[in-house]
Length: 247
Image (cartoon, rainbow, N blue to C red):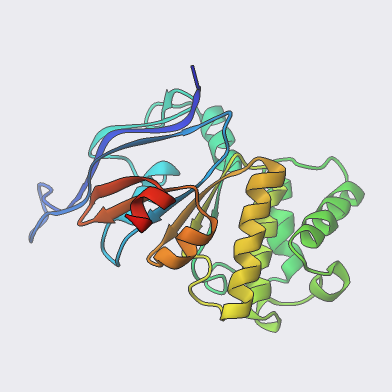
């Protein structure tokens, strides 16, 4: 029997409709169920138009927001009931890559700071020398030259470099799952291919599961094995990309 790394059980997320709120109720995610297996790393797409609920579902999976009903389980534990230590582990093992890499960085800090923060927060290296070695290794893994990257400010990097820097930052934590929210929507076609290849490499060579959140079925078909199609908060189709997209 396969162990579930992450499991969504009949999850619904409703915004609005509180005691002191006015206006319409929005059902952002409606009774969604699926799982990611621990011993079978995959690339799974959550695809849909803007407003379909795909980003809300990703936030639920990362424990950033609680479900209105249903459960989100990580390693069999309900995210609304886990201990401080378990939440610490969750934040290390489930890493996000955001749509807009520039917005994710403080413009007043150099690239070095962006990479040093997770090392310090998750105690990933005991000495500065080992931290520096780790930083250089992950930069090289995503195709960035340390000598040309470190010491610079985010605005001095191209959009593709900033996006790869986010991948490097995630890799520092040795994640089990990467949540990639529209990671190629703000880069040109040549960089898009490079970033998609990087995600595939993370999955195939490092055994990291990737949740690829996108509105673009073409890129989902290129790199994903499985896909969930969302519409108005519901999963309307699910299965292998071959089955769902071709049929």
